Length: 326
Ligand SMILES: [Fe+2]
Ligand SMILES: [Fe+2]
Image (tube, rainbow, N blue to C red; front, side, top):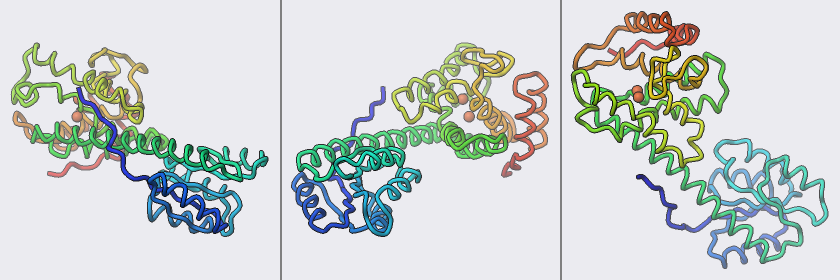
């Protein structure tokens, strides 16, 4: 059982953007006394620059500021994947409902009303930094999974570079099929993680050069379910789990572990499966040399003819499939 504990608490960095010097000084004093590192800037444009330079854990934005107001800064931070998960607190006038509504639309995580009560400020910032540390820990848990996937690949020298190529090719097919950003990201992660469950398959089976006995094949067939349960606790891998669970399913029901048919096989898993088979065929194996791209294409057409893969997906893949490195 793999567990990912939270990282040991580090000092949090808080960015304060307010055009009134005395307010910045007050926030700095309160937050520094709670052990936070505080960076302060007098306007919106400087806030954006500071975010990208110093990667704060929490951002406090006054709504009314020169050189870009707090709402616009918030909107930009929340639409940028690099800063989207950083909590933003908007500081609004006490009764300014309009600002709050606009703030919610801009993606603000929390609000404080002016004049800000010191206890409230410290409590809000404290809880948001804890949340940010949790998000960071989840991110590093995901990184740990990627490392695990690559470690599994490293157990088998024959699969050298397989995960990386698979991630690339699956995204390529996804783009050709017109999928959106979230699906493409899942395909990329799925390329790396599809075989993460092989951590539960013994070397004697995983690295066996010849054909597997029925008992060994049964063990091997457990890797999609093992991988799925490994990733189950991670919210950030939710969209990747169907790929891990179903990348050996085939549309005619001949795959494993569930023998799903047709549309029951998730689309993203179908995509990864095509890229997986193509990469396996065009890679060298102890019991056979790498097939040429033409031979691999013939094989994929055969799979489509037997209704194991979608013919359209195979055609789309082959129309953009890269020639394997020899
Ligand atoms: Fe697999
Ligand atoms: Fe694979």
